[in-house]
Amino acid sequence: MGVVTAFARPAPRLLRSQFVRFCAVGASGYAVNLAVYATLLGIGLHYLAAAAVAFLVAAGSNYVWNRTWTFRTTQAPVLKQSGRALTVSALSLGANQLFLLVLVAAGAGHLAGQAVAILLVTPFSFAANKLWAFAESGRSTAPRSAQPAPAMRRR
Image (tube, rainbow, N blue to C red; front, side, top):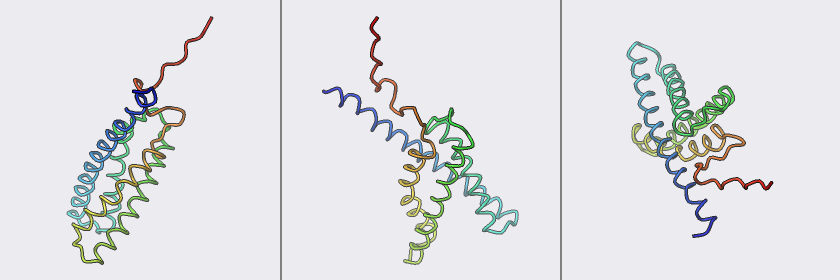
């Protein structure tokens, strides 16, 4: 096994691990969104206002979990990172709504259309969050064991 192969192996494992955690966070955000939405509808809030509030609550929850658990970027500036994460969430929501509109117009039920739309948007959302919103400049995302040891100084 070559040196390059040895150092390249952990990266796909890290990527898969982050993607699985990202999907778990997304599933929890989906549940938070629906719970908040149902609660707000129950107290009489208009459905569009309820959807907007539910989106913001879920996006906030997802941000905290993605920052601390999925991508582990707790040293990054909060305002810059949260603004980027909110931008990615808004773009993902827009893409989701477009997919949902097309799917429902094509005859899919609302729930089935939403389920498919979420699946279609997830790869974009993960890539945009990993590569932009939660990217850490100047720091490698490879595990320490995968990084080559620094060269020893000669005296």
